[in-house]
Length: 369
Image 1 (tube, rainbow, N blue to C red):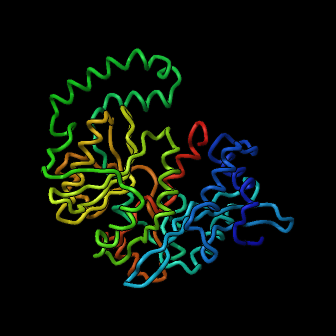
Image 2: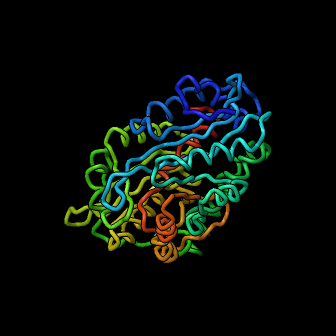
Image 3: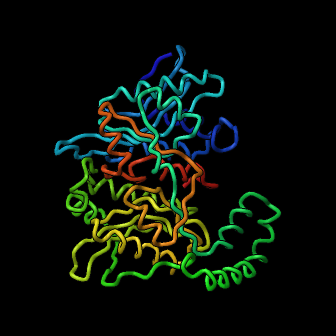
């Protein structure tokens, strides 16, 4: 077996593996899936030669497995560094499962300063730890803010059962009425917290994100360097994934016009709206979260969900959010063990925007965008 760097011409074979494992056990890839591989691993402005996705192949050149990565330039302890977000290995169904471990071991020995996976399955937990990584315990949990639980429940049931989906239009008004009653009886739990006042939001453009990140994240040991070209590319990509809802990125300012923070999420009316990044100066974190919750609630979201972090625990508790212990794990690795310890404690500034979870939903879409 040979492990080498991914090349653009590998895109159809990678798409074939994705098609088999995530879209119905066929090895004939959706054409949109091939283009998605090319867009994510070839066209991202952050793509570079030193830290690259990996391919395992046999002596005949057949692909046995693939490990994808997205690279983000970072500032670490005042110097330039690299963060890698990895898509867990996918392996040919006829190949040994150990191929996944070999790919991960090879990748973790690379030149990046910090590696994390935002979609780690529990079956990879032991392998990751044997290779020197850690599970980020708190970050592997999620906060959930419910607004319209009936709509969320109906949507989940309809997605699992065709019989429910067929009558969902009839049940919708009934469930909507139940949500109205529940929101009156459980106002503190099912409504957005009162905003502190004095905040205003505006679109978070690539220029604003790149320009304000250094000051906003200055106290973190590691922080991303947001290039305008990469942010523009990523926001365009995320806006294509319409099955997740309406893509929104907002900058939050104080009454004096100073930057307080930002948030990035999908607004899905009546459904689960996924949050990918919340950043704020410590004194404005509560206000930025309140603005996010108010906007989502006003937009008709059934619920908001995001990764839990040390800095968010108290804020989410006061806002009436719940804690959910299901779903994928967040895993981290670095040759500097103290760096992973700092990740556990929330001293590093990275988010789901630097991982693989945001484009996983394109793979999982009914129609690949």
